[in-house]
Amino acid sequence: MKRLLSLCIVCCTIIAAQAQNDVLKAAQTTNNYFMAKYADPTLPTNVNKIRPSSLWTRAVYYEGLMALNSIDPQDRYLDYVHRWADFHQWTPRNGVTTTDADDQCCEQTYIEYNLLTGKGSLEPTKENLAKQMASGRVDYWTWIDAIQMALPVYVKMYAITKDKQYLDYGMNAYRWTRNTCGGGLFNIQEGLWWRDKDYVPPYKEKDGQNCYWSRGNGWVYAALVRSMEVLSPRDKAYKELKKDFLLMSEGLLRCQHEDGFWHVSLASDVDYPDPEMTGTALFLYGMSWGIRNGLLKAKDYRPACDKAWEALKSCLHNDGFLGWNQGTGKDPSAGQPVTFTSVPDFEDYGTGCYLLGTTEYYKLLKASR
Image: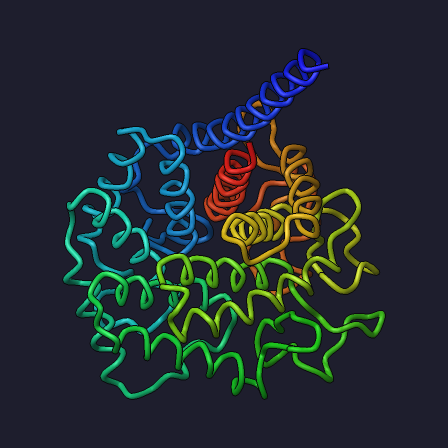
């Protein structure tokens, strides 16, 4: 009996290790595809018009790359980050006077890279945030995507400087979006967010359901994780964000489909019955982190994570291209039709979402062994 039990333990360990390897291989495959296709990170993007590679879509990719580096450290990843950030002089898109959260998204990676390597400069980020705080306004984040783009910048800067003005400003801006913008963009009853003031009731989907855009909710969910992970659980801000994280987790769990995907419209499938990758990846990211950090019960959320991973695995082409990736936009109708073979206008943020989700799931599998 003891021998049989030992054999079973060995077999389970082998299976768990193989599962981890499969997740890592998927992350590496799509990242290798991306780095080969965009070998020079300094080149601007050219989708309808020329944009610098410090724009938000590319910045989200670098969030994912830094996450991948945490489980698969490679010099070439960090060199790729450094070439990109150094070319842009460690400055937000459109300069230090910008108050646009999309422009500030790249600062998250500047901060993370500096903390990890001691290289680069945080002075432009400090100058940028100081100028925005000095405006006295906290009403810049009029769309929920902005929470992911900018809230972690302020919280991370607080975490490394201990200067509470950063945290206070970021949380006040978050509260304005949550409670005031459009009458409040967070529906506490359902644990889901309206994208901006144009989608709050009486706006409805064709079947009468509220319009909750998957990736928009994914942006907020990721922002809560990326902010809480650098705060002390004893911090009042952590507790406030944790409360919303738990409400969102409950709401999102109800929206997952049996195949593991979340669709572009979380509450309505009448017009959009097909899978979608980016929201699914961000929800896997948040739920895996929540389980691993003791905020979510594994018995309730681990099955959702396992199903989400199977869904994400099915998005990956052999060459590393990612299918079921909704293009840029602000609601379920954007970038349609979304299919396994459709090419989004930008694919960098989708790769970033995929890397965030798979790397955090990898950490969950490792912690569960």
